Image (tube, rainbow, N blue to C red):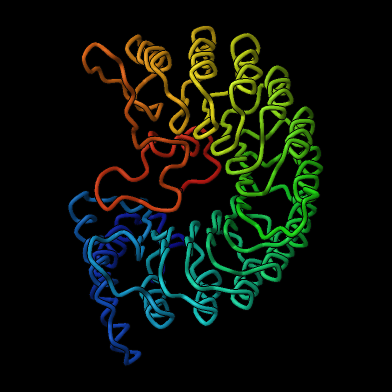
Amino acid sequence: MLLNGPCARKYPWICFFIVSTAFATLPRDYLEVCERFGRNYNPFVYQVLQLLEKEYRKTNKRFEDEFTVKIAGNNRLIPVQRLTDDDFEMLIDTLKPHYNVTGLDVRYNLLTDDGANHVAELLEEVQSLTYLNLMFNDIKADGAEVIAKALHRNRTLKYLRLTGNKIGNIGGMFFATMLQINSSLEKLDLGDCDLEMQSLIAIATVLIKNQSIKGINLNRPILKSEEEESTLHMSHMLQINSTLIELHMCKHDIKNLGMQQLCEALYVNTALRYLDVSCNRITRDAMKYLGELLKRNNVLEVIDLSSNRIEDEGSVYLTKALAFYNTSLKALSIVSNNITGKGLTAFSESMKTNSTLTNIYIWGNKLDSETCVAFSNLITSGRLKKDNTDVEPYEVDGCMYLAELSHGIKKHYYWTPTYGEIEGPSTNAGFAIVQSAKNL
């Protein structure tokens, strides 16, 4: 199927007809491919392609419109037949002719190292693909090597998610090598992949010179030392790197010294806009460094401090900086930080003089009556919109209370609801504010 060249430019309506006809026959194409290879078709894949076809016909998509095929194995109310390596091979062969399929989401399926060979084939032969989600499959170090080497030659993929695939330290080293060669990938997600110190240091070292990566997720590595070496190397990288705008270091065992190093690095960094240091061991003492940083740094737009222990004393450092100095921070999560009414009301007071901070998330702290009244006033006055926080006020017998809302900086990072809005800004505020990649 020839879709480029002078014929396509002279007669675009012909190409539109070809692509429209081809795309509308995706389910039939899939059955034909399975028959040609002598394989049984996967009813789950067939159902998804049928729904995609109906959506295409209903919305009357244009020739240039792009599609993401989503065959996630975890978003159905009833059990489904998840993709195996053979199913994935059939799916790839079906999608090859369809150049407006630019994204593929096969999270929570049964792909193994053998399936990684088909992933490599996809990256080498489907040059329109910009987004690939392989989250929580069963790809290990051997599969990581195959995928990483395929990306040495690929020049189109922008966003790769490998979250939850246990590629380990060896697999992480293959991706560190890839980042030295590939110059088109913009976001890489290696969270929950059992990376170790060696691969973390290698990735941090490579990112010093890499000029294409805008976002990287290194959540929950396997660390065997209390020395915070990974934080030290990431801090050194941030002092030099000028392109990274999103960094996730959740569950890195960061303590006060590590947070101090990160803050000192961000004094000279003029690029990073999203910093995720949730689920660490950061306490109130480290907040004086972050408070000083917020006084001088007017680049950071999203900070996730969820599940640390900054308490009321740490809140004071932050609220002073937010109230009188900072003019860039738009979203802040202080969920589950052992903050009482004193600290929470200080945040509400700081928002009265700060006009930039639009999103704040406070659930999981000690919400006393003073806190409930303060945040109720913020919301009813219009200073804080309901979509931009995770609490909603209600009144019982003349007393004000706060209820939890399903909103957050990255509420739908590991899962998505079966029904309703999936990628809305209220549940994924961090990614909506700082868009380092097109797809979540």
